[in-house]
Amino acid sequence: MGIMLKRTDSIPGDVGNAGCQGCVRVYIGSIGAAQNKRILEKLGVGSVLCCASGITPYFPDEYEYKLVDVRDTPEHAARLASHFQECAAWIRTRRTGNILVHCFKGKSRSAACCAAHLMINAGMNLRAALAHLRTARGERPIEPNLGFMLELRKLDIRLHGEDSLLVSAVATSPLDNSQG
Image (cartoon, rainbow, N blue to C red; front, side, top):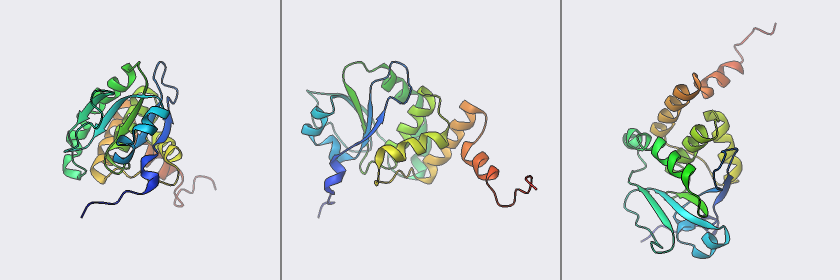
């Protein structure tokens, strides 16, 4: 028995270029989006970044593919993180058509890669990148697994000198009595 995909799984979220100078438009989606040629054509997709294990390109003669073979498990977090810079550079250098970044459900591996892209290419901190992705995906979740989140937080510190999720949590803590 196969996994049933909802109709909305074939419609990717529009991440845009988010202020990344020279970047084409990026979409985040599930395997359903990657299989939907009509949607890919409508969105002007020319390249597909697949962040999943065991998925082969659906239209290899029509789109440029980059495959990142990684499972959606916390144990594979370092493996995915080792591709963040490479994937961000790949996204930044595409010039023929827009880009679909997908995994199986479009909420963990692809979200981690898109967040890394926004942090590296658009200068966002992790908090802003996740908020941007949540807006792009609408009612569909953005939920990088715990291992991926840890790696994104490390990237946040490396790029921005602080963990924006922790800094924000501390700043809004009810224990903060610095205001009187």
